[in-house]
Each structure stands twice: as C-alpha cells, then as structure tokens.
Length: 175
Image 1 (cartoon, rainbow, N blue to C red):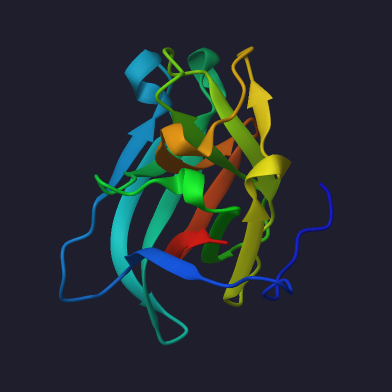
Image 2: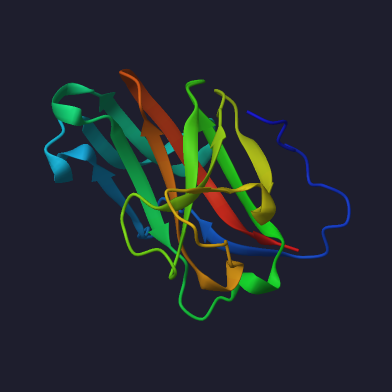
C-alpha cells in the first residue's frame, strides 16, 4: 500500500460532503456479499455510534468456501453531482486494522467485477483519507477512469478469511 494522506493536503479549495451519517436519519448504504454468487461469507450493515461518531458499519466473517471471499457496503453518488469537477474523494473511517478496498464504479463499467480500486487499512481511531482519483487503479477493465462518470463508492473486505469490522462516518469530494 502506498502512503495515503490522513491530513487535508495543501491546495484543497473546496469540500463537497456527499454522506454524513446521522443516527436519526436514514442512510443509503447497501450490503453486498459473495452469497450473490454462491459464497458463504456473512455480512451485516448496521447504523452505530463509535467513539462518539455516528456511522454505518460493515461487520461479519469472510469465508473462502465455495469460491467466496468478500462482503461489501456501497453507496450511490447522489443524482446531479458531477465528480468531474473534483480532484478526489475523502472518507472518514475506522476499522480493526485489516486492509479493505475502496472501489469506485463508473457508468463505463458493465460488469460487477470491474472497478477502480485502492487498498487502505482503517485503524481503531477515526481517520480521514484524502484520495486523489488518479491513485485509483483499474481492475479487470481497459476503461480509463473518468470522474464525471462516477456512480458509486464501495468499501470491500475481500480475499482472506477474517472477521470484518469497518465503519464509515462521512465521505465526499474535494478539489
């Protein structure tokens, strides 16, 4: 994993919040697991408060049985938002220290296994990552990443048997 800035990089002129979790408000995160393809991983999506911060949490157990091995929470970009006007995303997270993938999907991607991804390792204290779009790597696609086509963000625990515990309090765009 490359060094990822945890403090707001210099030169940021604007933040556009897309999701700030509130305990008394509905959230728009969805749970997806390898069970959609016959896997046996168990996942759950819960609204919680961790270290004084409201958040959505992905919990569960990753199983590699039956060609499985992932659980994910994802959210759609709100309609009318053009991420092409921004340099990257920020996300406030905490976790158990296991690496997770952040996966961006665009309208150019046609298959569920395609994405633009980056691995991060959330710790037990809240941290905010500032992630330039240029640092996301294409996975199983020849498409180029075009932020103007961004449609969703996923947080994915994948590839090894483990207990999953990762939470998101906020995310958005910056320029």
